[in-house]
Every structure is written in structure tokens, then in C-alpha cells.
Image (tube, rainbow, N blue to C red; front, side, top):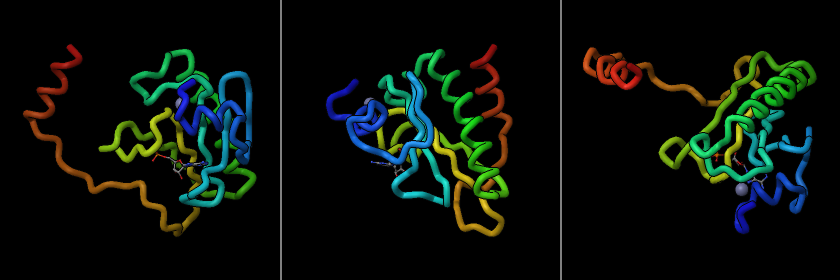
Length: 134
Ligand code: AMP
Ligand code: ZN
């Protein structure tokens, strides 16, 4: 637990939240600034600033709970789709430095923007990246 981390406080129940799900390791809450109806956040109780600090054990728990809550949101709110979004670092849009995964229900013709303009995979980039994994 980090003293000045708002998501540590929310995850552990020190700050009240609209909680959809809670277990020993995680809390799922409604986002206060929702991108769409039902926008929720999966927040581990253990502090990790981002994906790179997250334990494998917690990572596994996050995706299983995200899957369950996503299904319930999609069905209950009659959503047409749902994005899982997870930002790491300010450059990637992260504003709260405690790992969290967004569940963003999507509706036909909504105006949510989680897209990008497709680029082109260059031969040099491809070679450089493939080399990292050899
Ligand atoms: P990110 O930009 O990925 O770090 O996402 C942070 C998210 O946390 C944003 O969608 C905020 O709306 C949301 N948020 C920040 N503070 C709170 C809070 N106290 N309760 C619920 N959601 C919050
Ligand atoms: Zn924290």
C-alpha cells in the first residue's frame, strides 16, 4: 500500500466507491469519468504502478475477473461490444499510477474514441523488433 495512492485507498475500501465486485485481491468500480455507460475499472489491492510492476499472479487474476465483469456489463446493459484498455505511463495516457484495467462497454454509434490511424510496418522496424525476441 502506497500512502498517497488514491487507488490503494479505493481498492482497500478506505475511500468509498461504486463497487461492482470485490474479492481478496481485487476491486472493480465504476469510473467517475465514464467514457460510456458502464465504464468500470479493475483495481488490484496490491500496489503496482503499472503492468511492468504487476506480479504474474495478480495479472492472471485481473484478466479472469475482467472477463466475468465484462460479460455481465455487456449483457446487463445490452452493449454491442466492449473494449479492454490498460494504459502504462503518461505517454500512453496513464493518469493514475496504480495499475488498473478499463472495461468500456461500447454501443453502436457511440462517440468513444479508443482508436488509432493505422500506419505501415517497415522492414527495418520489423527486423529490429523480431531480433528482440530471438
Ligand atoms: P488512466 O488514464 O488509465 O490512468 O485512468 C484513470 C481513470 O481513473 C480515469 O478514467 C478516471 O476517470 C478514473 N478515476 C480517477 N479517480 C477516480 C476515482 N476517485 N474514482 C473512480 N474513478 C476515478
Ligand atoms: Zn496504489
